[in-house]
Image (cartoon, rainbow, N blue to C red; front, side, top):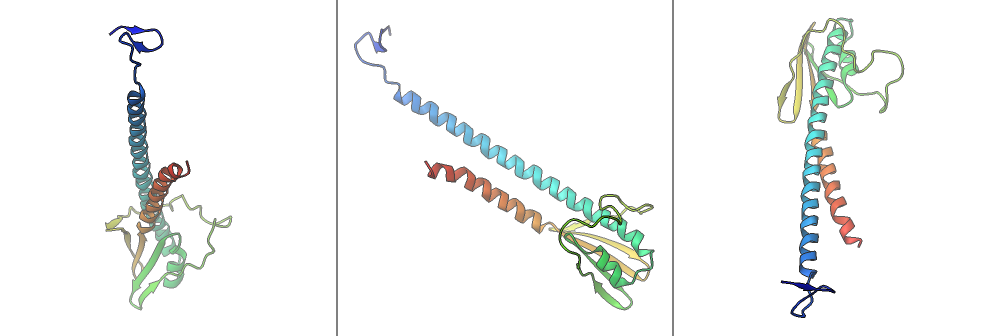
Amino acid sequence: MPVADGGELALGRPIRTGSLRRRIVLAVLALLLVVMLALGALVNVILGNRLRSDARQQITQRASYAQSLASSGLSAQELTDALTGQGITATFTGRQGTVVGRDERPVGPRPPGGRPPNRPAAQATPVTVQQRGPELTVALTVDGGTLTLTSSEVEIDRALGILHNTELVAGVVPRWLR
């Protein structure tokens, strides 16, 4: 149909663009919502995989450190205390019974000196990390018994849940503030 100057049809009726404008705005908002949801899910998946990989690497490195400490002549309690911390619990089971490590170190960065936390001990034999549910476990046979290192992914799942809830709140709250 021919359009006359001023946005009116030749028949004299004005063109109604409100419905078209509303549909475009709703389509763009829906597209943004889908993109934001996908991006949030992607961040959660990537972060969760990275945190789980880091937990596995940390318990593997602690097992390598345990192998070097086991040959240093420490008592069972000293050995488990030295290996317990940062989400990892050490348990030694031997002829005298079971000893559980105590984490008596202050929370925060390690003081200077000593073994760097990210470098595995020299001449360590490969270890196998077993996973049962959220628990990661490494069992090592050392002089006089078995040393078991245990870590849990429960804190990782809790952190991801907090992140997920924060993303939801951050997506909903700005709509109420308008």
